[in-house]
Image 1 (cartoon, helix red, strand yellow):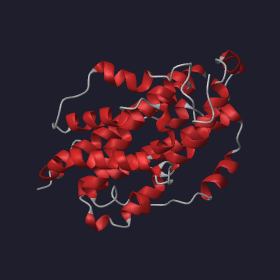
Image 2 (cartoon, rainbow, N blue to C red; image 1 turned 135 degrees about the horizontal axis):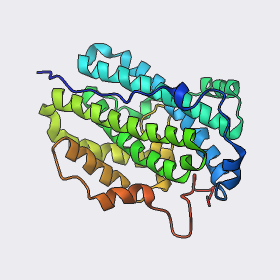
Image 3 (tube, rainbow, N blue to C red; image 1 turned 180 degrees about the vertical axis):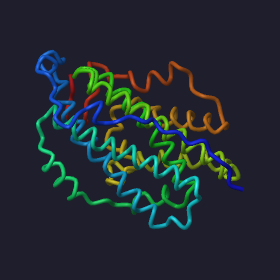
Image 4 (spheres, helix red, strand yellow; image 1 turned 90 degrees about the vertical axis):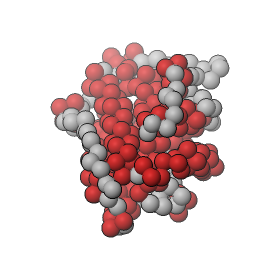
Amino acid sequence: MVGNPKLRQNCWVLDDVLPLDHRIPERYLAAAPEGVVQNFCNLLSRDVYSEGDAQSLYSYVMARQGEMSAPFLTMLELWLADELKHYEALRRTYHSLAGVDFADMDRHFAARHHEFEPLQVALADEFTLLVTLMFDEIGSVYSYRRDLKEYYRHFGQNIERIGHHLVKDEGMHFNNAAEVLLACHRHRFSEVKGFLEKISRLESSLKTYYKTFFLDHAQEQHRFPQPFNQVISRVILARLGLGQRPSAAELKHLWQWVPEGYSLVPISPDRPAG
């Protein structure tokens, strides 16, 4: 039986937060800690496009919409609207920080090739899509918390507000996916723990990001402490009533950890930061 999930959306207007013609005042660029401007540019050069990849995932799933429940499709519409707003928000952030032309970003994005075959285990059906979405979105919550702390907060109130909205939106996506699972898929909850272990292993084995939105953290696993996937899996299990939530200290460690000898987490293994 399909229930009635309580779906929520963080409603905010991008033009009110970060106008299209926004420019970061020079004083913020001058005052940013060493390495922060370049590293933020490098980070945005990935994040802009991985947010836009939500459209490819949506199109892939909607080609099979006859297999999906009405609550799932409603949730997916809210999710896509938010992710495309994130894409535009990060485009504006990247443009204001690095001066990259919007037309150049459009050309780069249009040339992307989306490979869904390596992620088939996550795309099998509505249940696996929802659990993977929870895994991906709660990972993004802690990823964006780190980014907010290390980057967004240094470039003025407008950019910092974008970071806060990204965290809040991803948290709502996580909860909306949980609501649909609780309403429609309780009969498969015995599979959740094993499936989380499977997609965690998959992400670790990918070594790259296939431009499908899902498991984009495969390209930045070095930015997080080793138990990251195990801790966020416990957050998911707790949200579904299947386990105990990690402690506040464990959760804080996910986004405040830095490798020994660094002041910032390296953006990529061969590009140290700070």
